[in-house]
Image 1 (cartoon, rainbow, N blue to C red):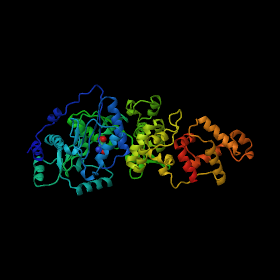
Image 2: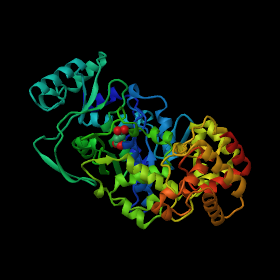
Image 3: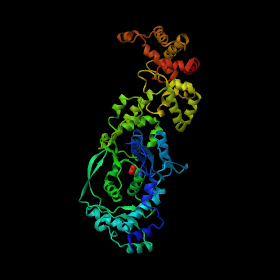
Image 4: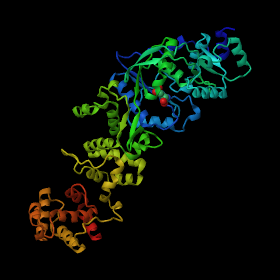
Length: 549
Ligand code: GLU
């Protein structure tokens, strides 16, 4: 029996050739320099911040080069698949407005692009064609090692401090004749298909990673499995070769944990004579934990999960802004010079990634987000708030929808000015800061009056002010002058400087007066511009609130 016959025995239904697929998926017709990137998550968990970083870089690289950003579902490990993970990936990409040009969504029966299928489990025939070629050329072989045998090989290798894997003398089945292999297959023995490596571990080759520069690796000499026995799907390495070749990927952005697989990928691409894509291995995202710096973890850190940002209500663009600062250290400088530009206009440079690991800093995200929210128009914040609360706080959503214009006015307090207020980093914080403006929420309130003043005194100040002085139509200057007048009338000092010189001459000062008024109507001792708050509340509501206290 020849290796070709053995290949036919293993893959009797495969009739197409690699050339057929080369024709079916030709080089993409794109402008010079256009990059083809892919986001290729495995649906084995909910998306984490590291995935998001690579997706963002993929998106930016493709957009700014007029290339293609596509989504590939790497679902070859069905036993570890998590329900809803695929849908969530789609949701995240939509939420952050990084929609891929090509994708395949089985649940809604939607496919876009001509380089698919974009779901690995649907590409079995394609993979088998490539594996069949290797077997027929004698470059791959069926391996009959059982799990127990492999475990014991691994154990002994670990004990003797040898390299782990099936290579050299451990590759027991690499020299089986096609007849011997065929016999075992026919008798129903289980097998995987392994690459018959031709590499020499003592030889080195150079490899250029766009983020990490030139690196040197020993050649691969491990007969890595390329097809699993369980579901006949390829391993990650083999699927990477076939998919990124046929989908004409030019740039692979992936986590640094894959760097150690470069020798394997190098050998696979060489075996087929395919050009390797360019690689950008991105640093792990780390976090400060007390004195230690460690890898961010989905189990330990809520901010490692993408769900966290949506639940908290970080605006999508603020999260992207932050991620871009992790991607490239010069992003902030660029942003300062280009405040209005879209983030994809930034010339991302893989070389400017920190190779030692990116430190995640939630405080910095908060600052960026506060800044971002403070620069929006009130109506834009309103829209974000409504969308967020629709999902996470329905009662509040109903309320702000009922009082839409009023809410926009509230959100507009001290907004469109040179130095707008930066009160909140997330949408979930807003309610806690404006609740007192709504009667529906103004229940069970705790007044933050200054206890240096007696209740009777406060009552006198507040009633005098509202009955004698306050008028909603007053402009700010008049309003402020009246505040001074009521202060003077009741024995408080209207001028802070004069007060500081002789505090014993007065009951208090103008700040005490405005504080009493502020607390009386809002219950809070600190609020944004009191003048506008009073105007927005209006006479009737103020009256009701005064009566309550
Ligand atoms: N499916 C792999 C993962 O989720 C993708 C790695 C890659 O982008 O090549 O880790």
